[in-house]
Image 1 (cartoon, rainbow, N blue to C red):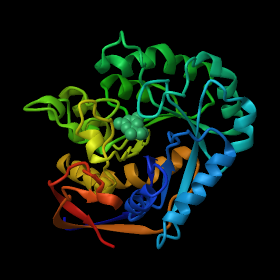
Image 2 (cartoon, protein in one colour; image 1 turned 45 degrees about the vertical axis):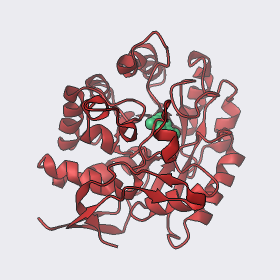
Image 3 (cartoon, rainbow, N blue to C red; image 1 turned 180 degrees about the vertical axis):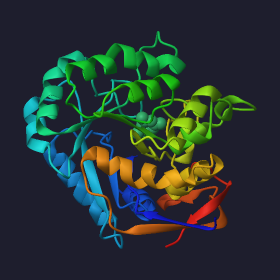
Length: 344
Ligand code: DOR
Ligand code: ZN
């Protein structure tokens, strides 16, 4: 097959950051995705409706020629979030709120200390149809970093789902067999996103033959058997799993550092990387569901009317992306060859 046309896709998990970086990040996502869920972990974080709307306007201003790009916003939950904030914000353009356990990842210091104290907020979310997006890792230093996702399911996610069966939950960027099993075993109100890096790589790609800071993200890459389970479930075509790239830029110096930042900037090739994986799995016919149908269906939104064509045309991910003032970002998969290109 040399060409593949699918319904236009959406990215249900992206970090655009803010300020002058928006020109880079928004263009990279809007080149092929019609909608994107913009993560709220800015400094300071987006905790209220007014901030989310102002941030959305900055993203739209940066979208330039991509005038039909539709960023969807999220609130960042903190110990101070009240049901009133949810009631005020819940809408078509702020469809979700994000739960980061405090300290679990980038800019999560001011996030949620006590998840149980947020139960009235979850109740308001269920009532107003707002989705709960979850970074599912316990930040407990006593828990091994490779076990933090499984612990989160047992300690928090299962109890939240049992207490609020009507609350729609997206278990973001899942990485383990346990997460796949949890999502498959729960009802229609639980789904998950999966990133390209967790489908393409395992922890050998992070640690064997040298530390690879550009493959470092949170949740960290796991063993091959977990990677294989993620690959298996996306090739099954299950509607509970959909595209969320977690594209997350950090400047080169911040990644190539004695204490390197977590995040893979995959936006330059997000859809193409997934196409690569689905083709390898002999499941290219399942790409459209994963990229363009399961996400909006779970969010209760219409499917995009437009379509997009991928053509077989080898290209190489740049080794570096130049920003203003001599700064740069090393993209995910830098210098490596891809088999599919999005036809513009
Ligand atoms: O690797 C990650 N980077 N994981 C996250 O959860 C956050 C993200 C970021 O914002 O850089
Ligand atoms: Zn993220």
